[in-house]
Amino acid sequence: MFSKNQLGFLYMFISVCAFSVMDLIVKWSDSYPVGQVLFFRGFFGIIPLLFLIPKDRYLDFYKTKRLFLHFKRCLSGLISIVAIFIALRNLPLATVVSITFAAPIFITIFSIFFLKEKVGLYRWLAVIVGFIGIFIISEPGFKTLNIYYIYPIIFCLGLAYVAIAIRQLSSTEPAWLIGFYFSFLIMIVSFFTLSHGWILPNLEDLILLSMIGILGGIANLWLTLSYQYSEVSLVTPLKYFALVFAIIFGYIFWDEIPTMKTLSGALLVIVSSIIIFRREIHHEKEISISRNE
Image (tube, rainbow, N blue to C red; front, side, top):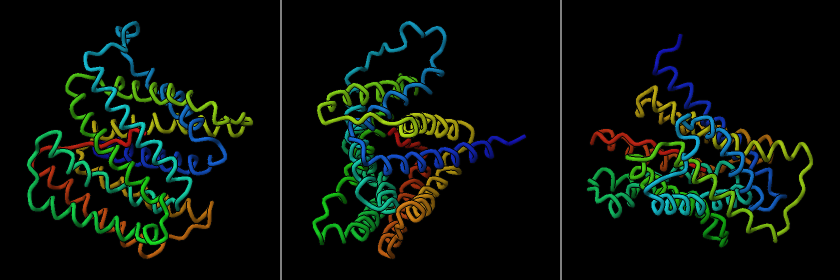
C-alpha cells in the first residue's frame, strides 16, 4: 500500500506526463485550425468532469451565484490556451515549457493588485530573477522580431489571472464546476471559427485530437488529487519534469536541441518560481496552480 505522500507523488507525476503528452499532440496538430483543436479540448475535456458531479446535483449542477467571476476566469483561460496552442506550433517544445514556468512570477504581481497581498523583498528579487530568465530565453526572438516568443508570456499572464480567480471562486464553487464552465466556454467559442476551414480528420487523427481534451481534463484532476493526498510543498517540484519530457519529445519528433541560453534561462525561471513558492509556504499560504488548459 502507498502512503498518502507516495500517492501524491504518483498523481503529480502522471499529471505532468499527461500534460506533456497533450503538449506533444497540440504541437503535432498544426495542420488543423487552432479553433478546431480548441473544440476537441473543450468537448472532450468535459467528459472526465461529468463523473465528479454529485448525484443530487445532476439537474442543477450548472447553477452558480458568481457567474461574472466564472466568465472572467474563463475568458482569461481562453486567452492563455489559445496563446499556448500558437506557441507550441511555432517554437521549440522545450522553449515554450521553459517560459511557462514563469507563471508564478506573474501571479505574484497580480496578487498585489487583485488580492491586495503584500510582497516582500525575497519575492521581488525572485520576480527580477525570473524576468532575467525569460529575457535570456527570448532574446533570439527579440533580436529577429519573432513574435511567437510573446505567446508563452501571454499564456503566463492569462494563467496568472486564472489562478487569482480560482482562489476567489474556490471559497464557494466546487472544482468540477469551475472546470466545466471553462471547457464549455472554449467549446462554444470554437464554433465561431468554423468559417476558417475546419478539416475532417481521419480516424487516427480523430483519436489523437480527442486525447487533447481527455488528457487535459484528467491531468487537472490528477493534479487536484495530488494536492489532496500530499503537501503542496512536497509534490510541486515534480512539475519541472515537464522540461525533461519537452526536451526528449522535441528531440525525438522534431530534432529540436535546446540551446544553452534556453537551458540557463529555464534554470533561472525555475529557481525564481521555487523561491516564490517557498515564500508562499513560509507565509502559510499554500497555493496550487493547475494549468487549466
